[in-house]
Image (cartoon, rainbow over all chains, first blue to last red; front, top):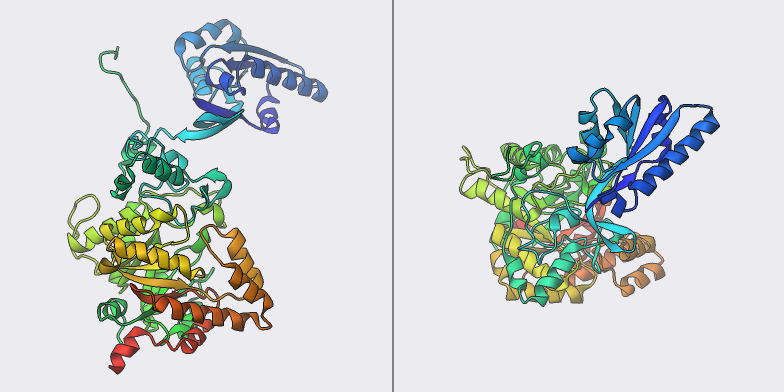
Length: 222
Length: 309
């Protein structure tokens, strides 16, 4: 899933202080699951902002509304009435949401309350870990089902660097060395010899490096 | 002896090679390189010119390599995958060859989070293995990575690094074998303090046929203090400093002298290991130690041995 983290409140204050009629828009999909930008969190942020504005004597209104998904027109179209008369939308979705809103509601300024952090999964309770960087050319069929592009600090394709120690990455003991895990998995599968094959150089043009990407499913293009 | 191809000639003739390290300065003064080169000249067959080592910005390895050539010393230019994509790397490889560089050491590089620009964007377009293959193809096909022909191929002796002490241990020799397959001519190892583990690594290398296909230079480094020994033991990933070494450094009255003695003992031991073709002495910011180490170890650079017949 997409994991997003709230921006520091001091930054959100900077974006929002000059405006009077603010709508905080939550998103009830990915960011609701990672407990950072769903209905509950959007409401919490709105009350925090109201409190801050009262203390600062800023006046104005801060309301909140949440849609199922900010990345789909059918859901953000529902916001038409709520957006009416607003001078600022603060989105608690991943950073797709505020862009979708900025395009749909052309005359309103939209700012993000979040930073999209990663595509990850819950590894421990309430801790998400990056598993995919949407590189566009998945290699995990060669690497025991584990991704060296997203999960190795140096995106290595040909085995662990000289900084792998006790299953940890050289950059921090808190970071797993995915190449240790790849190696262990391949040994368990009896496929360790496959790691002797040289992989790469990669075609990065399938990633963001080839320019912004689009995807149209065949037969579904309008 | 004329600069260029010294290392290749020494290793090709089966003489025991000695390489050292010359770190470029954090400034634009060429005199720093000239002074360091003077300390190393005559004591090594070639010297590694580091490339933004530990991700700290320094004078470029290509420029420093050229300055070293002008001092009559042979450089081994290091190139990491951290700071350049394949376009920049191939451009630099051609440029370096045009400036007379004949040895290129292909590295992935320390992660940028270690250095003085932790906010920078790491490149890693290639890794060390695919960099090696690219250099070899530029030299031998001769073609760029994209397949286009190289008009005048760079004449390079291709090297890499290997760390016998990183994990997973059974994969370390396999990874070196991949570098051999990709096209290296020589390899320099991580600093050796644990000789027993190095011997196990070399046994695996022999089993994989690595020692027949590339020349292995054993990495060594003199410790300067007990603090340095402890730091390397506990804080540097992929380093294996034995308790015995730490104890000796702690007990020594003259730590630098003891550090050199330990280094000399390790050189004498690794020299006896089947498949070791030379030593790489990493006396970082202590270049004058190289002369003392080679003298105490009774080690003459291979090119002098060949010259003296």
